[in-house]
Length: 88
Image (cartoon, rainbow, N blue to C red):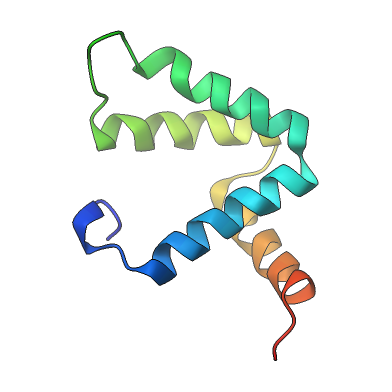
């Protein structure tokens, strides 16, 4: 469960950043829209958003901006990774 941020490994961080790389390379404008949409409803000056609030917002905003759900993102990212980072 990645809600336990202290338990994340370097491999987790690499996977997360690979997904960001995928979105930036394949949908740069939509990625910017997504970041703006994610920050608007949940962050207020001087307050930190709770992780559950961030996840709920992400589950709503992501399909609205990208036109696909998070499961489809995972499948498309898996295909992209195999092409972008060939096995050595």
